[in-house]
Image (cartoon, rainbow, N blue to C red):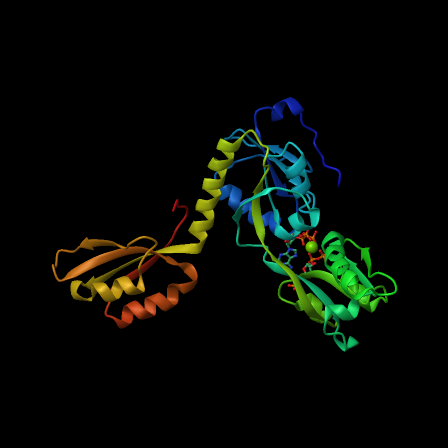
Length: 302
Ligand SMILES: Nc1ncnc2c1ncn2[C@@H]1O[C@H](COP(=O)(O)OP(=O)(O)OP(=O)(O)O)[C@@H](O)[C@H]1O
Ligand SMILES: O=P(O)(O)OC[C@H]1O[C@H](OP(=O)(O)OP(=O)(O)O)[C@H](O)[C@@H]1O
Ligand SMILES: [Mg+2]
């Protein structure tokens, strides 16, 4: 595990819920937004990896994403945010509480485009380079057992920039993350197998004594995630067209229907999926809806 800068009196941590956050990289910024949305305020001194919340009995511990599953499973840390790939690679038991909808990518077996390799079985007995040695060993062990090569498939670890390994003559194939595929293509690689799909998740320590507080933070974070997925839509529609309107915007449970001064018309308020918003507005316009307004939701509980 990497070293952590913890120049804080451990007594100050007593009674606080310990919450591990990725200390840098692409998950870090998203986590900042989640903490802000959940109103977990804190002050972090420069270079310090522990920050005490200023409004809740919480301490934030900033750690490498790869180490968070181990800290949460085996240490005193109650809650954490990391990737599902990191949990699987760490091979530890934690509770996965919420899928957070960011850090989405696939852990893939990749080979040089011109290698002629199209199936992972063609890599058996050859050299694999990866940051995910546990998952890669698990995958290729099964193929080794089945195909019994002269010598087992070699799995070697490097910590980053894994894609250069084939070009450098270190590997016949790699196991690494693919999101847009840009890095893979730039290195002249192609994917031949998807070992797992992953995204960031909120995890908790199954043995934590702070289960009630964990539920409270989980509720808040769920609210922030829901708020980012939905928008609030209001519009007016002729009462006679209400059944059509409800079909287009059924709401999470039911739409709220309010009377207007003019008895022939009603006003509808409803949450809709942000990604479907333009399509829904088109459909509403087509059935004669007027004054269609979309509001962003700052926070919600659903
Ligand atoms: N290209 C990517 N797209 C989406 N999610 C990713 C990507 N690369 C990594 N992740 C997710 O982010 C988590 C953390 O990855 P990692 O520790 O490599 O940090 P990083 O954000 O890539 O920063 P860096 O590699 O610069 O240290 C991974 O577990 C994975 O779930
Ligand atoms: O499919 P893409 O959108 O190109 O993303 C995939 C790349 O992103 C990550 O690398 P990162 O930028 O974190 O650098 P690293 O390899 O040093 O971790 C991952 O390890 C891949 O290399
Ligand atoms: Mg990375």
